[in-house]
Image 1 (cartoon, rainbow, N blue to C red):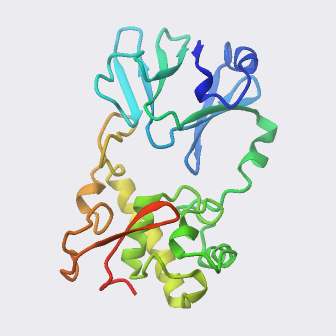
Image 2: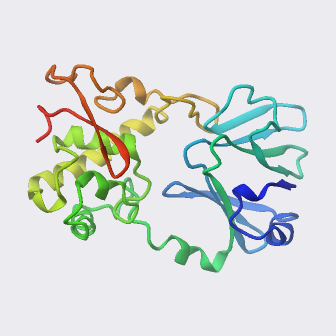
Image 3: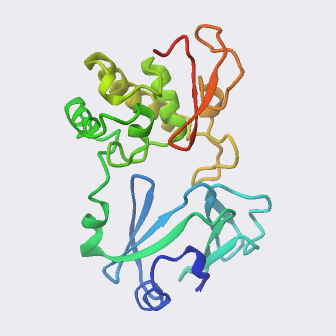
Length: 260
């Protein structure tokens, strides 16, 4: 096992005692976190952030990657490789991260629920009801709807691209305060979140830069988006120009004609 401190949120000693020699029992996801349940009664949490990437290379050299690949993914380790795990199968798992925002963290399994309790509901889960969404949204009445939707305590895992696409589908301008929303607009946003994410999952995500899924395939949602990444271009609905602004420190795209 090779680790560089830049990507760790746990002491090196803990990796040596709780990760090395442990068996991976299951792999799950919560929000944007990957959760590896270990036989040591610990959970390995991995967050890829903006440029993180996992690369698995088998003993015979077969490579499979997921996340945000860099050129020459088959040449691992490389200068962006910060963690290397040797597996009992003879293969290796590499963690690359160009911008070093991603991280690994080990926590006791008993602490997992407490670690994740601040996250809101999963948007494609049954408990993501309109009533629950409205209640959580109401906690942020004085913030913009764009900021509220990016807040992981409101909706888990919703990111910048899909927030812009959601608000376009709901015909709500991202700068609007949550307190200004009518009930029918809140309902439209709730429905749009589910619709947009289902469409994105079917398209295997959005590969506007480097992202690929666990099978190394690029996502195709980028080709069917309406506003994100299209500033200065014509709106596909009304023909007006898509505008770009900054909200909550994030690039935000919208149509001033379609969204009110």
